[in-house]
Each structure stands twice: as structure tokens, then as C-alpha cells.
Length: 104
Image (cartoon, rainbow, N blue to C red; front, side):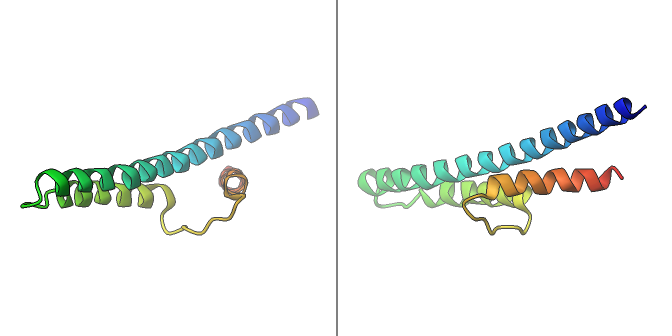
């Protein structure tokens, strides 16, 4: 009987790890989105100012995409925006503990 419980706890631990790992991947996806935004918008602004300076159209993609980045960040983080250098490990542990407590 103890072997069965041990297996179940290991399986539950694995499932918590998988969910936490998925959440970390979502966070990394947000940062990729943000980096792309930070690099593409200035290029777009440069192109706009160099070739069609009479109309500043780069504001439209900047605002539209910026709203997308904002909502992506809210969807991933909620209001938790403070991270240190070991945020990935802390987040995995946090999500695993939350899942463990939810299953009790």
C-alpha cells in the first residue's frame, strides 16, 4: 500500500512540475513578445520618419501592438511584476506549491 501512495505522490509532483513549467514558458513567451516589440517599433519609426515624415503613422502599430503586449503581460503576470535573477526557479516552486495545496 505504501508503494502505491509513494507512486501517487510522485505522479502528483510530476503533474505540478508540468503545470509550473508551462507557466514559466508562458512568462518566457511574454518576454520574447516584449523584446520583439522593443526592437521592431524603433525600426518602424525610423522607416516612417525617413520615408514619409509628413505623416507619423508608426504610432498606430506602436499603440496597437503595445496594447497587445500589455494584455499579454497582464494575462501572464496579473499584478505580480517583481522578479529577481532566480525568478524562474521561484515561480516553478510557487506554482508547484499552489497546485499541491489546491489538490488537498
